[in-house]
Image 1: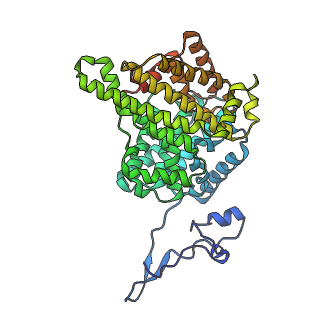
Image 2 (image 1 turned 180 degrees about the vertical axis):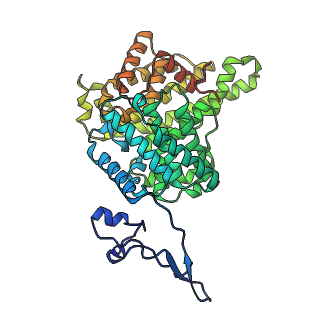
Image 3 (image 1 turned 30 degrees about the horizontal axis):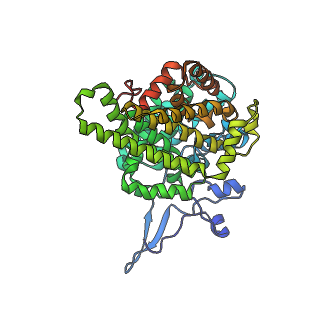
Length: 453
């Protein structure tokens, strides 16, 4: 469209900044407490080459009442600003939360999902059990709006609708026990929506923040469901690189390690079949499977080596392993320690997973066993110092501690159960001995599958 005029407000045009064209007041003016005349017109004037001037009415989005949207936006901004304890910040869930205030009032599904999440978050801050006192009205509304959007728009699902589905997955952390399938169902649904988008659709910073925030969940749900992870397809590689370059809260070592784990679903599936129906495998199939397991271990070993050559990471490792008895020691350190803790926990868990797969295939030896036990001890010894970042900042321990549990002696297993319950005492995440065993078996090709299809 040649000669298109912006609908931006006059104040933004005078200040020579981009206007989001929100009605009745744009975000820039609202944040700066400036008078905003709103979008100049619902009509855009344009000139088609070789043709006369035309007037075309643009699509106008019907917003919820301005007072309702503004109050929700204000509540979200204040919640993000006033919660100072690191482990309780909503931004622990991903970079997308920094973009959410500007998206309030655009999409009914997103507004309802944010209201549901904020209410559960508020109850948790008041030390109430959200899953017992929750008001499901906003949750039900969000589900209805999402279904309507999916039915009407199908492959053109708006970013806000996908974000709403992602937020409902987070909402389930407040309101469901992880042994149930609610989180996996929602997270899997978001993954399917992102896959249907395709990498070319993810162009804006908001889209990229959704993808980056859900990246680990795409991989974990693929493993639990034993479904090949679409992120390994060649067409997604440029987007992975883009995430590393432009998403500020991405920790590159952990991101690459997660990507390595994306190859697990098919390997876990085959190892489980072999361990339960081994008579159906030929000797050649066994050798091929052992080779795949060794290649996976080699990739994990390479990623862990790159992690350890980082001098800053080594310093943090010493801090994690040699800290005093007070859990505030880690909290007093730099914010990077939380990211490093995740990095090391994930690497230790990946080593245990790779070695357990090798052992199940009969390719383990004393060196593999010793490495596995050392990784499990490292997870156990550092878990006690993660309380400063609970609960949202340590959600990943539901995987890493469960993996350590699966290879630990009985007395250490009992201790790990107590530690994980202490980390999530304000969330309805109930990881007991049975749940942790099931989680371990699910990601290492054992006979028990946690989330059957």
